[in-house]
Length: 385
Ligand code: COA
Image 1 (tube, rainbow, N blue to C red):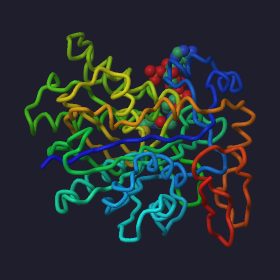
Image 2: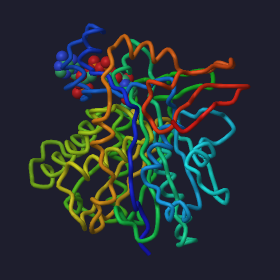
Image 3: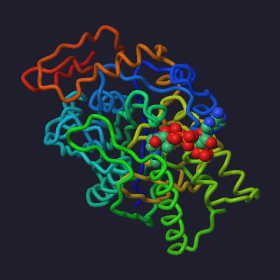
Image 4: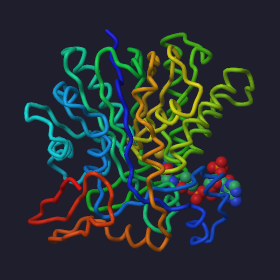
């Protein structure tokens, strides 16, 4: 039985900042951001948005009444959790109006956990082929104002339906996971921004990619030429280039050039929103499917990485008609309003964060379908907008 991704959709906030303006404000050459790091625009997050509202906005695009009926499980993968106990998936289930006979859970392992969610979903569908699983990767990447990581912030969610006979990507059985206990990026319970050793994280990312790819090739005997594209978790788009070139070296044959073109296509959307943490690999997949040379029958290789650290290399075969089930990125990226650096800083400092106070947010300036209206009696107040 084929099992995999049946449909994908993306949502981000309705505000963005031009990173050349951030470069000017931080007294940095703009080429460092746009060429050296590989980011052009960054999603700006108003206090009325969090991972629940972003996740619900992405998932809502996928749902029809019939699909909603078939969803047995909602998995929200995130490292920007809003509660240490209650799963974000419960709030999302409520906002989406799903029936009560559904399983809901939240997964965490830095930027990796949506891939665990996909694999768990495959298991559920293998045991119960009539069921469909909604897997949502939702995050807000926050490194802090005036930090080296600031240029690699971002926000958004990718929602996926996992089912039998998938219409986008049939995931193949062989995958390689790797876990090592290292401290390249983490966020203690008392912190709203991550601690990160940026340079170390980029080198362990590359080492992890090499290790899982090598082992995959040992297990399968499959040459790189069997792939039409390798897709990467993109915390910033240069990261994918670093990893790809670490494997290609000075190769300039048809396979290597095809991979380089595919990487550029996968980077296009990520350049415009920044890091989605759990969602970045899946935004790269959507971006490749909408901007690249993808064709039904192609085999794609996907590298998922989460600091801490865990990596997985897995593969899938594109299905006939896949393009119809990858919801257009253009509307989410186009229907946004540019804000100044000063406005970004103001909104950054307005996030609900760790406060225990009651608070009401004005939701007037937010055009998203779901909003966080504030906090009352220690409970977040979500509503349709
Ligand atoms: N024009 C073009 N490129 C320029 C430039 C200019 N004027 N100035 C600098 N660059 C290049 C550098 O050569 C470097 O390229 P390289 O990485 O290919 O060597 C790149 O821009 C970044 O410059 P660098 O000085 O190394 O950046 P930094 O010290 O500000 O840190 C990160 C960059 C990515 C480490 C930092 O943003 C970070 O910590 N991000 C969060 C962590 C993360 O995302 N990790 C990923 C793994 S999960």
